[in-house]
Length: 166
View 1 (cartoon, rainbow, N blue to C red):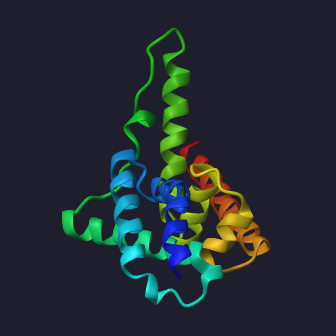
View 2 (cartoon, rainbow, N blue to C red; view 1 turned 180 degrees about the horizontal axis):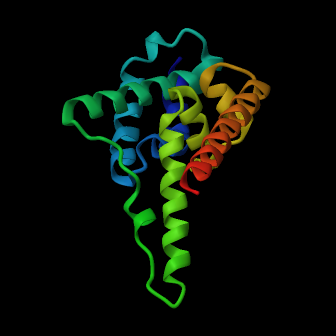
């Protein structure tokens, strides 16, 4: 078990990427990554299966993130960078693109928690399906199917909303 304490720190980048997908905030992700590593080392005796260390660390990270949301009443909003755009000759195109991006994020937020997390882990965290499957203690195929179904649901809702606008 002592070797695991030292190896937990090697997972810090992995944990950081996971938290960044959840929080969409670099500072909060860094803080929560440090706290995750601290708690993991402190509670290393609670790890029952050394092969599931990644899943265990992600659970700790997610719980810390949820505590952070509850304690400070922080709500994850659409990243400000999505709302910024450069003014140029194609301002209408920029506005349409930003509107589409906002609508996409709104549709992602309507997904169930697991689908939403998988979308963010895949798109923002650049995690492979195998890594996502490990986080949830599932297979790579499960992660692929869940991502695909979530993507289909988003496309369906976006198309439905576009029909209502016209």
